[in-house]
Image (cartoon, rainbow, N blue to C red; front, side, top):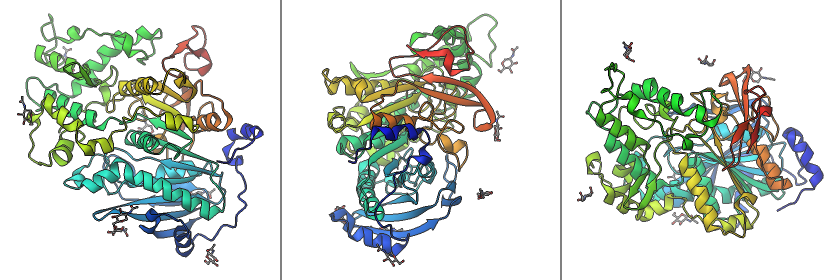
Length: 552
Ligand SMILES: *[C@@H]1O[C@H](CO)[C@@H](O)[C@H](O)[C@H]1NC(C)=O
Ligand SMILES: *[C@@H]1O[C@H](CO)[C@@H](O)[C@H](O)[C@H]1NC(C)=O
Ligand SMILES: *[C@@H]1O[C@H](CO)[C@@H](O)[C@H](O)[C@H]1NC(C)=O
Ligand SMILES: *[C@@H]1O[C@H](CO)[C@@H](O)[C@H](O)[C@H]1NC(C)=O
Ligand SMILES: *[C@@H]1O[C@H](CO)[C@@H](O)[C@H](O)[C@H]1NC(C)=O
Ligand SMILES: *[C@@H]1O[C@H](CO)[C@@H](O)[C@H](O)[C@H]1NC(C)=O
Ligand SMILES: CC(=O)N[C@H]1CO[C@H](CO)[C@@H](O)[C@@H]1O
C-alpha cells in the first residue's frame, strides 16, 4: 500500500483536485490492450477471464445498460468524466460465469472503489460506478453471476454454482482481477481500495472482508442484508402470519399508512425530545395500539383493527425467537409507510417464500403454510446459506490490516430491519476483543426517518452519498449535491479516516424541499451520530440546521 503524506488531506475536500499523477505509460483503451493486460496477470482465475470490450467514454459521455429491471432505474450513468469502460466475463465453474465492468478514469486518483448490488438481482451497478468515477476512482461492479431484477430469484433454482457466485465468489474474483487490471493499465500501484454498497451490497462488502481481509482499506456499508439464512426464515414466518390477504388476521395494507404510522408518530415522535414528525428514538417508545381497536366506543369500522389484526401487528414488530434462540429482529417503529411496497404487498415478498422454494427446498410448490420453526433450523444449517451469510463476526483480520468500516442504516427501513445492524455491530465487538475498542475501526450510524438505503416518508434528512442514494437524484449526480466535502459526504469522510486517521464523529445528512431535487433548495440538515450516540437538539437554534444538534 502506498502511503500519502498528511499534507495531502486538506485537498480531499475537493476530490477533483485530489489526484496523483500516474507515472506509468497508459495504453490506449482498446480490447487488444486490455486483453494483453489480463494475460499478464499471473493467476488461474485470470485464465478463466475474457475481456469482452474496452471502449473510451468522452468527457460528459454516458455508459451503461438501458434494460429496465423491475424496481430500479435504467442503469445508464451520464455526464461522466473521460474514462475507459471495460467489460469482463469470468468462468467460475463448469456451469456458471459472472461478468464485471470497470470504469478507468483518465484522471485517476490512484484509488479503487468496488460498488455493490441489490436484492437477489443480477446487474452491473453502472450508476454507482459513475458516482465513484467523479472522484477519480477506478470503479468496479459485478452482475453476481446472472441477469435479473433485485426481487427475482428464479435463476437460483437447482443452480448451486450460481448461488455461490451470488453468495461471494463473483465479488471476490472481480476484486482480485480488477486490482490486477488497474495496476497494469495505469502502470502503478493502487494507493487505497474502498467499498460502497447498500442492502445486498452491504452484505457483499462484509462477506468479502470476512473471507479476504485485505481486499479493502475502507468500507461504507448501508442497511446490510448480512444474515441471509435468518432473514429468509423470518420473512417467511411473518408472511405466514400475515397472508393470505383478506383473511381475518391480515391487515388491509393501506391501514399501515393511514392509521398505524400516524399512531406511531403520535406516540413516539416526542419521546426523542423534538416534535418534528421524525421518530428518532424508537427503542424508547412502546406505543399502545389499543387506540386503534374496533372495540373502542365510536370506532370507525373502516379505520380500526380487530383483536386478531392487533395480534398480527404485534407479531410484525416482535423479535423472532425459536426457543431461547434469537433469530431475527422485528420491523422497526416508523417503517410502516413502506410496508405495502415491501414486506406486505399483493404477494409474499420473494426474499421469504420464493427463496424457500427456489433455494432452500428446490420445490416450486412448497406452500407458505408449511413454515414452522424447524424450517429455520434446517435453513440455517444448509451449506449454501453459509456461503451467503456474512456472519463471521471475528473481523479482527480486517481490523488488523488497517481496515475501517462506516455502517449506516435508516431507522424507518421497511425491508432490512435496522436492529440487525446494531446486533451485527455488537456481535463484532464481542468477537474482536475488549482490548481493541471497536470505535477505533468500526462505527455505526442510524439515520432517523430514512427508509431502505435512501429516501424518507417523514421529511427527514437522509442523503450522505450512500450507495444508490444518487440513483433518485439523477443519473449524473454524485457526492451530496452542493456539499462535496467530508462533513456531508460519507465516502469522503471514510477516506479521511482511512488515509488521515481522522475517525468519523458525525456526518451531516441532508434533504431538500423536494427530497430528490437538490435545485428545490436545502430544507433540513442534521448530524447522524456513531451508535450508541444520538443527535440531541440544543433547544434554541433552527431545528432544520445541523449546527443546532450535537452527538451525545
Ligand atoms: C476455471 O473454470 C473451470 C471450469 O471451466 C473451473 O472448474 C475452475 O474452478 C475455474 N478456476 C477458477 C480459479 O475459478
Ligand atoms: C453534457 O451532455 C448532455 C447530454 O448528454 C448535454 O445536455 C449537456 O449540454 C452536456 N454538457 C456539456 C457541458 O457539454
Ligand atoms: C461468459 O462465459 C461463459 C462460459 O463460462 C459463456 O457461457 C457466456 O456466454 C460468456 N458470456 C458472454 C457475454 O460472452
Ligand atoms: C372512516 O375511515 C375512512 C377511511 O379512512 C374515512 O374515509 C372516513 O372518512 C372515516 N369516517 C369517519 C366518520 O371518520
Ligand atoms: C415443520 O415443517 C417441515 C417442513 O415443511 C415438516 O416436514 C415438519 O413435519 C413440520 N414439523 C411440525 C412439527 O409441524
Ligand atoms: C419531486 O420532484 C419530482 C421530479 O421533478 C416529482 O416527480 C415529484 O412529484 C416531486 N415530489 C413532490 C413531493 O413534489
Ligand atoms: C501497452 C500496450 O499494449 N499498448 C498498445 C495499445 O494498443 C496500441 C494500438 O491500439 C498499441 O500501439 C500499443 O502498443
